[in-house]
Amino acid sequence: MTQYDPNNIFTKILKGEIPSHKIFEDDHTLAFMDVMPMVDGHCLVIPKRGSRNLLDADPTVLAQVMAAVQKVARAAVKGMGAEGCQIRQYNEQAAGQTVFHLHFHVLPLRTGDSVKPHVGGMADHAVLARHAELIRAAIEG
Image (cartoon, rainbow, N blue to C red):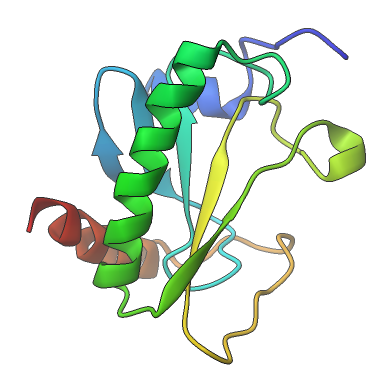
C-alpha cells in the first residue's frame, strides 16, 4: 500500500484551497457535496486527520468519522426526501478508490432510483448549493 499523500484534493478542501459545498463540520470531520453526484444529495464525509483509507486509519479516527457519517446520512435522507441511503467506501485502486484520503459516500435513495457512475462532468453548483442547504437544514432542524 502506498503512503498517504498530504496534498490530495480532500486535504486541499480541508485547507480551503478548493471550494466546496459544506454540509457539516466539527473538530474531527467535514461533510460536503460530491461535485460528481451519483444521485441527488450525494455527499462525502471525511476525517480531518489524514488517512489513506480504512486500511490504515486509526480506530479513533474511524469512530469519529462514522458518527459523522450517521449524522449526515440521517440528514441526507430527511433533507432530500429519500426513503433510505447507501453508504459506500472504497479502499485502494483495485476496489475503486480514486481519492486517497479516507472518505465515505452518502447516497440518499428512493425506491427505483438509479445510481449513476461516478464519472463525467461536474454538477451545476447552484444545484449542489441547494442540496447542501436542504441537508444542512435537516441537521440543524
